[in-house]
Image (cartoon, rainbow, N blue to C red):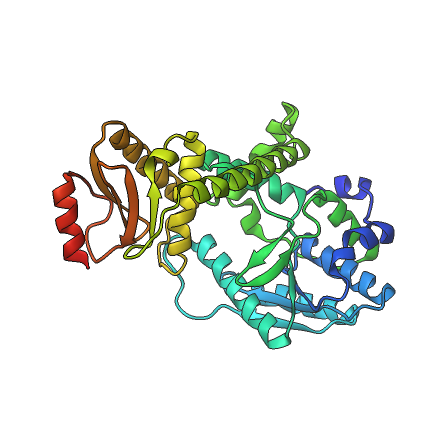
Length: 363
């Protein structure tokens, strides 16, 4: 970011922090600080807020992925800045073999795993990360390009959970240039990660496109509003799906779940898909399926469409989805069992008698 632009932006004030950080009162905080201006500004602002409000000082952790030569120096800089602010800080290192592909996703997963483990040792209750309005806009664009549904297009949530830990993004509605301006105003040292501009990475490519989108009216603020509206629609759909599930659910004795398919497929398509997605996800939380949320949604959409068509034709169908075998009978009962070792993704039209024989083989 151009430093001249940042200097024209207003630094974040103490009054803004009092309102923004009020939800953190009484919590034991762990700040994830990378050394960039966003997280350094968050560290300084939270430290000042805690001191003024007589809160327990937050702990700081910086994850050194060991992927760049400069990472050790950047981690040391964070430790020094934290010490200047009167905060305890630790460096968490990602060790072991690194993947040949999907490096950013693997590094992100390792980062949160290390942070969650460190939080447990500190008895920290809340993890803070410095995602900004700019990060939210880029996330929405990336997910839109991959074909995400409502949940993905909702972007990142300000309040949520990660690795079983309460996760707060207190700066999610704040522009990055204000955080750079805050660091410059206070003299807080920060570093710049060159990978943020590396066109090999999708986020960097979208970041380069943002000025053109802004000139055509699609700026970070409008993308954030879009994400908020998607989140509101997603919440409404979730409630409708919960109501539908209660209406369609049948007693289960020898399977994971059983539904009245007639009632389910009388609902709008979006509700059908969400009900199936929720049922499969709830039973598949411990799976090692590493497919993206977008790919999983496509699979649920295809599965729902196949069952909807089979139900309309009063035809039985069996299909694999999310480590479950879903079975629709010609009598309009849709049920699921755990999937045994088999080729995934295949579907077969079956008669009721064949389905009965299949049930006998799996019990």
